[in-house]
Image 1 (cartoon, rainbow, N blue to C red):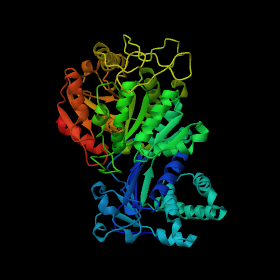
Image 2 (cartoon, one colour):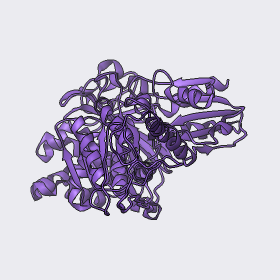
Image 3 (tube, rainbow, N blue to C red):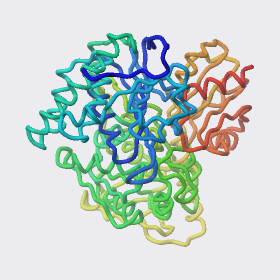
Image 4 (cartoon, rainbow, N blue to C red):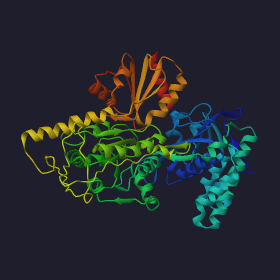
Length: 582
């Protein structure tokens, strides 16, 4: 058995009960993501609840990338700052995560990857990953050995690990598969040894039901939700962190019987999707802030032509290129005010992976029904996060189409009390349909008539908006509706805040999470009345707090804001809340 050296002699066994936070760190190209993929899937199939998220630099090779995996006895879905076990694959990782290290952090890895100044501060277990990999045949197997060690620490099912490796590397031939299983076995035995010799103790309970659950990312949830909602056309121009939705959709295009088009730019992408809706299809574009900025003219066209469109906008820090691989909630105002002129739109922001599936599916019904742009706001943290969830309930999904068969005297822009005109498509019925980016009469012909222009503006910007508002989704209330303090948040911060809220455990504090951001539903003001409001957002100015003031005349008393490109951790939110409450 390979010798394992313990630095900083004299420390007792470190025990982790109920939950462990594992962080892997290395350069882009070192295979950190491969280890993450193996561990999350094998541990889940072994019966453990898992959660994972990553942070990475904007480069193809080099730099420092890390991934966090939480393994827990109960469902766990939020990012924590604390690192329990750290596996560095190169030097520079420890300085990069220094603020996340605790006195109980155990570092597993090679001596050459640990800077001298940290040896007296950390609990370091030297594991000769390279030597073990070379015993198998090549340093390429280092990552598989590392994965085997972690699975061994949890006494996971080795056969599950072996079977996963057979599937993962099967296309590369039996020889490669055999070598990877051999490497995993070496790592697994070492992980078990570390527990048996009293170096590390892990007490995390398994749950047999977890084995049959789904491991889903935010990216996959949005893509699958779109398909469930009837999407049959997706157009895009690549831009992180939104591209994964398009890639996943393209990989499964034949299975889903959908068309996925990578086009020359974002302007072409949204105009293609508008054309798809005009013809009767259900189209979506997926983009990020800079790409959406280029789409704003077409968003305005959708407003005037009352042409449905669904846009997935995965936020990242701006302005301009900003931090292209980091996270932020800075594009709410962009989505809210995009396009010239005045016209309604719907803005949605899922807080959980399950919600991303259901909400994206519903977005297509909303676009179809109200004939407006529907914008789904996610962010880098959200799309790159995944965890195990129960099976999706497909019975909750209803594809509702609102296309009518046109009569001879069909009026595409008929003036109605609720602002919604009957929508036809070319070739369906006897009527003629005219879509127009100019101001128009009820048939769609261009007009500059003074009174008619006024009526059309009111139809779009007032009547239709109020109709949508009456049917808007209420936010989720967690806690007592008569609580003194009310936490307000939207989108991807949901699980981080909820975990901090549960740790806080105070009856005088409640949490109101918004997934429907605009137009704000009727009744929200009553929920906020008389409360001390604490708004938690990942932007500089508190954009949602400002929206509450503008729309409802409600003033937020405390803003907890983060805008360094990193997600909130549970510890940060808990500390901030304690600071406000004290």
